[in-house]
Amino acid sequence: MDIVTGFMIWAAEASTIGVLLWSRWFYERQSFYFTWGTGFIFHGIGVGMVAMRGTLPDFVSIEIANVMALAGIGLWVAGMLQFDKRRVEPFIAIPSLIFVAGMLLEPVRTSFSYRVALFHGAASVGYLMLIATVLWGDNGRSQTRRVFAACVGVQVLSSTIVAIFALISQPQSFATGNNSFLLLLVAALCFIAAIMSGTKLINERNEAKLKLLAVTDPLTNLLNRRGLIDEFHLLKRLHASDSGMLTLIHLDLDGFKQINDLYGHQAGDEVLIAFAKIGMAAQRGRGSFGRMGGEEFASIMYVANMIEAASVAEAIRTTLKQRPIIVGEHQIAVTVSIGIALADVRTADLDTLLSTADRALYVAKTNGRDRTAIGTESDVSIVPAIDHADQQDTPARASMTQQVAALRRIVAIGK
Image (cartoon, rainbow, N blue to C red; front, side):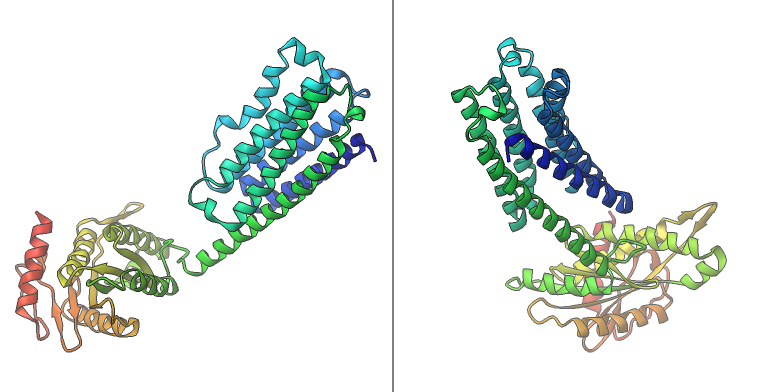
């Protein structure tokens, strides 16, 4: 089998992969599938037209063919950027532009060996761009990405060797390049290995997406109950040697059934989404906010003390109370009742925290709603609230020291 036949096989394989990627894009509508598919189609057609030199006009089999093949490499880079949800930059056109610029030089345009060296030099640049894109940022730590980059690295080496041989031996056609077929075979094998690594990357992405869906509430995009449980164990590991506390804040929207009855379930969903944003904004990197189910939410955070936990809860409660949620023509006033439980980070038990926070939430509900209550092993305390200063709160065996400290903290934050 001669090198021209090898080119045709390469072109057929690349085009077939391109069509398969297009079909995947048709069903999933992920932009990187379309971009990669187009890249393989361009590359395949370009290599095929190069192999048909003598049958096609020189302008088509040289200029257009090589530019298309190199554009395919640029599109692989573009697809990788899309795969990582990054913006596609103009630099993806560099390989094609290198060839176009080189062909403006008379010695290159009229010499077969110089054109071969130019093409493979431009291809090497494109492959290096692909490697840099694959290894960019934290994603580059993935073992699969490193394997993929290594396979593309062999492509760089192969293309560089072909370019050097072309300059040294000055072949006048593909038939006179003694080592070209061997290098083409090596490149083809690494090309296949790179495709296999790329397939594994896609599979890993899909698995990660499924795992994310398993711990995410589809309406609010917050963590669900399972995700919050995972977050608790993560925070406990991260702060195992610290002296702070883990807090579980249980939040329940007041009168949510009436909101659904009066305004409809669509409005109810809008209220849940709006409240989710308020809760997320209050975390400030200390933990995670999630939806336990229905109108119940929870926050799991690492805090320094009880005052910090109460401050976050009160910030959520007062923000929601002061901002009516606009749904269509309606302004819906919503309040929330909150129960808080805390434990030393080293001895924190999730079931105990959940039970204590539930008891505190029940006290907040039975004491007029729109309240925050803090639970301990033995009692529950209503947190004094600025907006309830004119009302008589009824604490359940409240600790006066804790209440005064919490009130001072809340007043300071409100200033």
